[in-house]
Length: 205
Image (cartoon, rainbow, N blue to C red; front, top):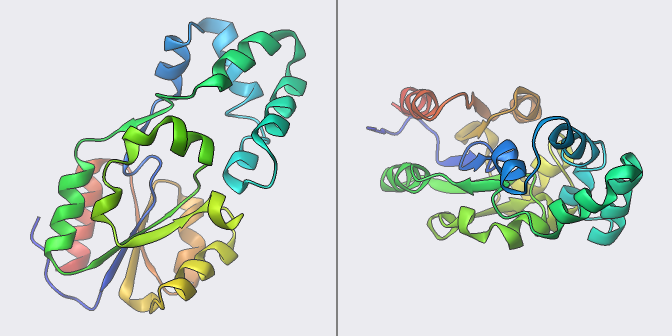
């Protein structure tokens, strides 16, 4: 990847689905859940409206766990087993560090803006091995805001005194890119590693 200056001085990355692998189905299989049971656990927890509470960090983990159980009481035991240790729900992506190092070599500042919970940060610490290569950023759990809430983006801009027109934001969800565009930040929808690297390369040439 060859990067040249085109006015952009900061590259902002999402983390989940961009710099770390999302491994929910593999995670459930390793927990021993398959078929209909896996689907029930998934919809009671990760695909429930309550999952975002982990990222917001306004409730305790025990309070959130109780909400998951309320979503499907007959599988309380399985939900508790799943939530006891979520290691593997996200996994390291080996191409992330070289990518960040290439951006670093171009002289750009590297930040993150991520919906991320303390629970996953703690249980899946290995997935965030690349953080020392970054210049900073915001986790939702630290500021009690989540994408696509515009306030979350404003917090990042204010904290790092960013000039939106000189930033590019990479996220795997289109809905999370819209607030950035409205602020004047250029955006890249992450669909694959090769595609995102190529799009960033073209944008910065």
